[in-house]
Image (cartoon, rainbow, N blue to C red; front, side):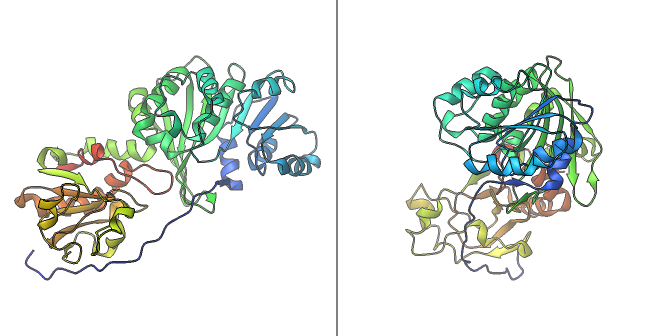
Length: 420
């Protein structure tokens, strides 16, 4: 670290707004294609919206009875107009909240059975209400959920579909990365895999939905008692189409249902090199402590992920601008500072695997979006080099999770394989 270290200057931050994500036509067709082999009589589209999935279903299955449900008052007129000219279609629409615990009664008045269902739920966390408990209990998920006030709408839509479908029916649903990868939903995945047969789990490319780069997946779930022993995972890329199937055991699928995670995990295991974990060599791995609102109380810049340009990945940088001295660490235990020799890695962000650098000088005060990695001096160069290597970045990317901005957990970071 004797060379001149590039200095980083503070940049302005921006924020992204979240909204509902709408299915592109090609993704709707892809979902229906994954349900090949079915010959349903009645198909349910819960939260039908603009009718993209319903239209794809009608192209695949002729002469079906289609039942759509949506809370939007304009949906009825739009959907009836959309399917009016479709030959042979029997379409019925229910104007109702898709997450109403009374929906089974409304459905049974229109259809005796539901053979298949398609669904693209909103990727939001709704305000919990009493009726949700009945939905998750009927689907068998009441004992495996995290804090009820923080349950994804997609999980509730999934549970609602399962309770509405007949025995042996199949559901094709788009779900956010949180249900696939987040540790808080591990028990949910365990229950899902024990109770139902997961026929496919397909990772979709970002930008699959209009107006967002949300990370999402297609799940095909059969409502039968024959739970599968191995789960087929795939990945769909716009450029290279569908990957080959990767079969993983149920125990491994409980950890994650993500193709990238297991594909890279297999490569790491098959490597001939000897590895130890980052956790076994690190002196300390700690995230910063200051939220974005707390940083405004300081009269000097605080180091954030926006101060980690990807063109400086792997560099040892001059960070004297971010904080004044070692004074902060000794006078306020709430403040987390880095020091020369530390490695900083983004904890959140769409491209966090590219945001890693070393501290050449300065004692930067860190936000809670940055990890401080402290290792013995003789290992500093090696660890930084391996983190920014193509294999290292691929490993980090495979361990990230999150619908929009990605996250990397400390538990995963501790398992980063260090070549010895």
